[in-house]
Amino acid sequence: MATQKSVNYTAELTASIVDQYTNGEAVETIAEAIGKSVRSVRSKLVREGVYVAAEKPKGAAREMGPTKKELLIELESLVPYPVDGFMGATKEAISALISHAKN
Image (cartoon, rainbow, N blue to C red; front, side):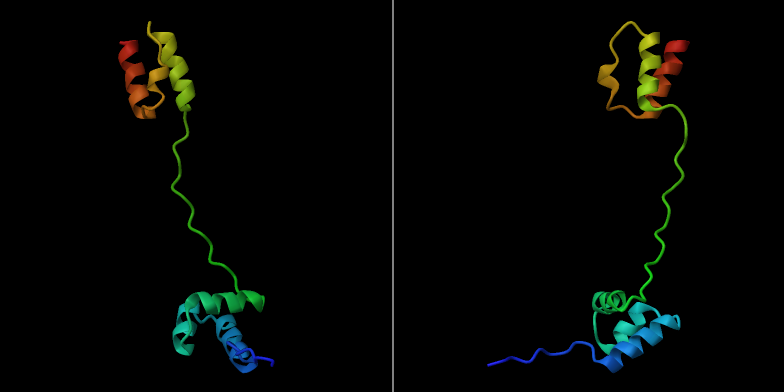
């Protein structure tokens, strides 16, 4: 007794969504038009070798400067007490302590 597997995407539907996608149609729009989830359509496009992932946004530019470890070493050279307890402090707070210790 062989069971027949139901087909999610016919050859015609596959050709149609590939054509729509390569012509610039959004995956969300295609999915809504054919009554399938975005994830399903995206997976089918990946299997067909046409899906190109959107470029991920880049993170905010980080301020360059001394590391927290470097700041703690500088603070340690300025104060007569151990500074290992300041590891949880922010770089701004350690910088403020350094400024205060220099005055």
